[in-house]
Length: 371
Image (cartoon, rainbow, N blue to C red; front, side, top):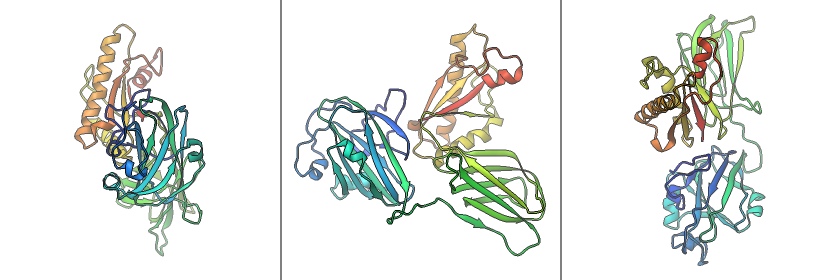
């Protein structure tokens, strides 16, 4: 799939065809532009348009709902009239089925305002393709988003929760771990991993985990991954059992397109782009984050500390370091289409005039921009 790129640019691949459509995540906004294609469409869309003449000037969007639910497709800021088609079929073959005229057309509209007011029910396990069609040669830009709400067919909200109860009759005390959305406090089912203590070591999937513990856990590593959220890492996680056991809540921050996040504990050789061995655990966690969030693309941003005397050299070094991370992730199985690298030198310091090594280290950093 051709990933979407922010800041006024877009993928060089054409997204005028279903096979190269932009993969969307729900409740995020996308800035897109029609590419001004000329001529009449002769693809399978002509079959679904029931013989009407339509242009080849199209934008295709692909969406796989995380659960069953209702969705609104909102398209704003375009002066050009557009038509929209929504197709449903299996996740693996939605475009193949479209090309063979086997996909199910579940919605058609020629009015974008009416489209935004229309709620469609989507089923978990199925794939959806959305075709937006403008007039031939039009190059208007638009903002598109999919507003998704997990619901069953009766309109009842589906909560992404799963209680994994490992307790049994015991004199030992209970430990609860709850995973919640930092914005709305709703449960999130995530992948939980403990490492460092035989009593608790293991991998679990839950929004609420509860187990018996016979003793305090003085230190272990806790990692949590959930699709659509930033990962959580704590290397010095402690569980101190009180009279009523121990209850903890981890709040995960939802991914937002355009958000920048710092990646700690990435180290390079002095003055070089070579990644040091102690960076590997964090790079592997970044890889895991991208594997869990398969529709997310990132820009890797390199920053260095400096005194303003070697601008060009520092910018080159920061870009080479960012590219070193890109190469590592690509070798670890992440598609290069989802990765880009940029060096900022010391044009964006955390501390304009660092006073100590801690502040200098804060300036020497790696960040990722969520696309």
